[in-house]
Image (cartoon, rainbow, N blue to C red; front, top):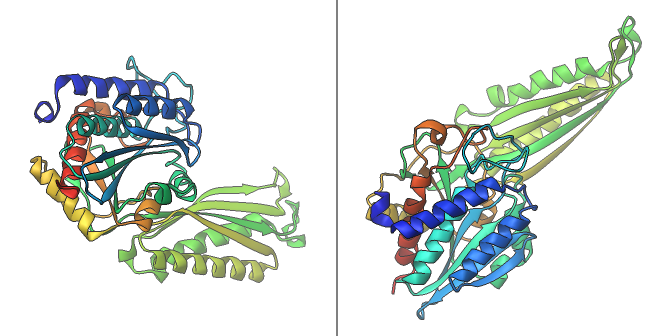
Length: 387
């Protein structure tokens, strides 16, 4: 399949780009060399290139014909703070940082598409190639939007591909409506009265109060929401100032909330605040909570979803137009909240490191997927911007 969609020279170039990015990973808003290299490659195709959009973001413009419509194609650029265990010749050279989510492949595929379309456009309108920083922390898309991305480079629709390990290579799946969950981070501060471990009745130790809150928070999903909501409330840290014989007077609970719908997110936050206030009042301590949503729910629009499935089927790729929603979160949500969009998954394969989970220290993007992704982008552009 791959050899039918892309000539060997471009496949080799995309592979080299991908390996180059993989060997030199950079964290969110620190993608300085990555962005510089992306811009350099795009300029070599003759595209109009803008750097520093939303800090380290890169935008390239390709216009053809007299069409007035414009679409955006997004690739993410940042890596993760993970130590790679692979021994490939292109393994990470930056200790403690690696491309464990395939953003190196996403960039290479979009660069390949830019090359294909600049050499042989076959469309009428404008393509905006968006290389986004800091997807992993949910900050890059909003930074680009706040920097005027959508005013400077107006688009009618926006699209993004994310590879999916464990799915057959090139298999395209998406869905109408919500496809990725939101992520909200919470922090609960409990202020009580510490004391000697042998005399707990003299104060109010915050471990007991915090433990009660942890258990009560679990009843939100198990007893207050319908099972079909798919909501998750997880306490991930329990920190106190206690010692071996000192009861803590202060405790901090930190955690993560995932929801599929904005209304469920608001309900979870309201119930969490009720529990914190109620348990704190019962024990005569002070309880405060912060609840910050950086990743909102990713919502796919009808027309872009249909366009994605049409382009995939034209290339004879396997498709699933109604896949189950994903539990992970995606910064693309801010783009698709601003203009109609579609986030899609593309199978990365099932063998070896290609089948390892995203964010695993032995994960690796499948180079055989590069020409498929580039050809898909080209087909989608020609579908949405016909001559």
